[in-house]
Length: 194
Image 1 (cartoon, rainbow, N blue to C red):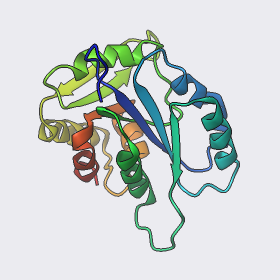
Image 2 (image 1 turned 45 degrees about the vertical axis):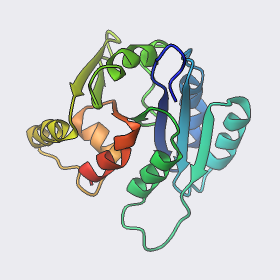
Image 3 (image 1 turned 90 degrees about the vertical axis):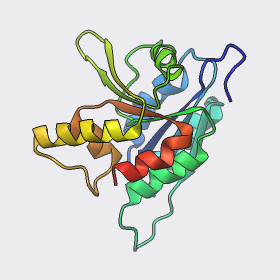
């Protein structure tokens, strides 16, 4: 999975639902980063707008873009969580970065900066971007259980819960811009916040 210089590879995973306009605007910033080994995995949650067409067009122009979809079933309790599960299964790189299509990378060197932390003993990174300065702040964890308590404290401080809402709401409510985890722990992170 890793390149010859032992930099970790990344799968940026996101779900979308009727976000054609956001994809047109924001997706090129993610698919054109100057990092050697990464992919962008987008799971469409049965959109009814032009999302599928935008993804098809973007995929034709960016070899590092992988798209898939979640069929609409009437008995889905938590389609976003199912969509992220599909994204984790589709991810083929060393690390998975969960984010939202509306969260632009803070800089072109974002993945390069993350790679330094991903080479450490850490297994999970919670990322914040200072919108004024563009500085990236990371909380690193050597174990997923440590992250769970930090996130629960932040939810409690804000008076909100993410249970049953999942990643987009989790990122918004807790103030994180992205969550990066070693790929072998991707499903564990999904269970952690369910």
